[in-house]
Each structure stands twice: as structure tokens, then as C-alpha cells.
Image 1 (cartoon, rainbow, N blue to C red):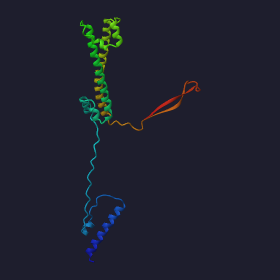
Image 2: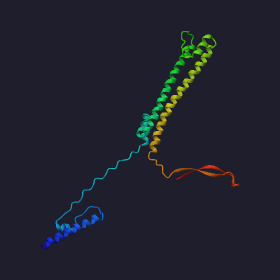
Image 3: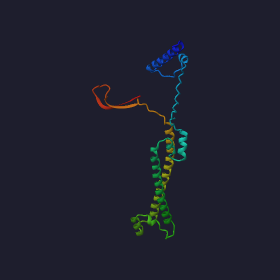
Image 4: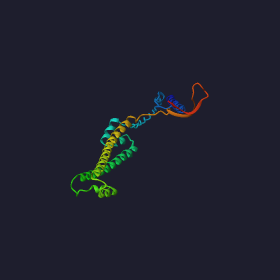
Length: 227
């Protein structure tokens, strides 16, 4: 064995010994080719770097966009904020108010027509008789219920259903603005975090009834908030 081959084999041996020593110590990293490897004619390839993991961006709603969507159509702001459980409350409220609006508006039309019929001089227009209860119809036919009294009853009923219809419309407008405010506030407080250290503790305690006489005490509740 000539000297050149001996030096090459010995350098390669030292390289493998150093690599095994690094693996046993748990060291990680890119192995650079040393001078001994170059002398031996061996070059180690560097490992390919791993592709960086793309972190998924967390959704944070925009309050201005939430309120604009809710203004365009009620419930869109809640969908944008991903608060889907609020949709049955919103559309259930609108469905109930729409039913109340139709119901009051129908009776308002009936009593308005009956009131106009009793006020005119045409005896053929007697729709007020069909809308009255049977007892009032009999009283009117017997003469115990006068035309003026019946007119007052019909007018009061007409005003009653008009007021209820107007209140229903106001409630629908109010619900529209409530959905807008809810969408805006919900988007603003989307990242609001309540610390787990915040706690409320209620426990029984003895309350001193008289500051002078320490013997007068009563049983009560003590409330403490820890931050």
C-alpha cells in the first residue's frame, strides 16, 4: 500500500467516525464536505431543504363589511361573521312580524269598510252586520244597540288594528337595525378573549349586623371576583 492510498483511506475513516459521533449526540444540520473528504475524493450531497409549511390565515371579519352586508339583506352580516345559529332567530322574528302585519292589516280593512258602510246613507251597504258578533247583531236588529253606538265600536276597533299594524311595521324596522348593530358588534368583538383567570366566587359568610356589638351577626352571601 502506497502512502497516497493510505492517506485517502485514513481520511475517509476519520470522516465516517465524525459523522457517527454527531449522530449519537443528536446534532442535526447540513453536513459540509471537509478537507479530509476532499483529499479522499468523496463529496457528500447536502440534503434538500424542506418546503416551508404555509400557515392557514385565521379568519377575522371586517366590521364595516359586516354592517354593509346586514344592511343589504338582514342575516348576511351574521353569515359573514360565521354566526349561523342567529339566523333562525332573525328570520323567525321576521316571519312572526310579517304574520302579525298581515293579520292586523286584514282586520283593519274589514273594520274600515264596515265603518264606512254604517256611516253612508245606502241601506244596501251593510257589511258591518257580518263582522259583528252574533249578540251585537241581534241587539242592533232589536234596536237596543243604536247606530251611533255601533259606529263608535267599529271606529275603536278600526283604530285598534291600525295601531297594532303600525307597531308591527315599527318592530320590523327595529329588527332590521338590530341585525345591523349585532353584525357590527359581533365583528368588533370577534377576537375578544376572556381570560380564564377571571372568575366569580359566591360563598356563605357571617355578616356583622351591629358594628358595636360583635355578638349580633347574621348569615349572608359573599361575592368575590378574581382577575
